[in-house]
View 1: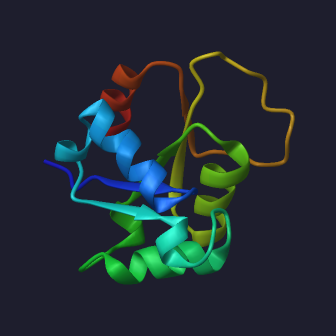
View 2: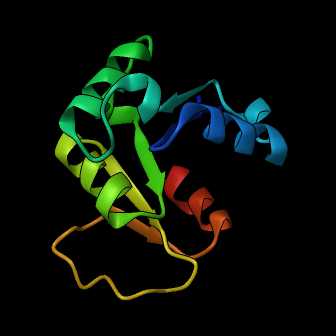
Length: 114
């Protein structure tokens, strides 16, 4: 019921191999890797480029789910997109970076998305 995209920093070849090896590729509409985009998360340029590559992208209906406060959550905040910090280790957030949501298990997403 949702369109899913991977947004990742790293070397394209390495990230694509990880996706294939984990058999996750089939669940995502597209994979956006910083190596191909020319910018890294959390830069505004990275998120602007990705948003421009997704047809009919609407920030209001988007949610960035990530485990990195410094890359995923900060980048989403700067791009004006709601964020969800996946924090299975229940680390304390002692930064100024504030996610819209925080979850500790992936199943917790159901409550946010419904």
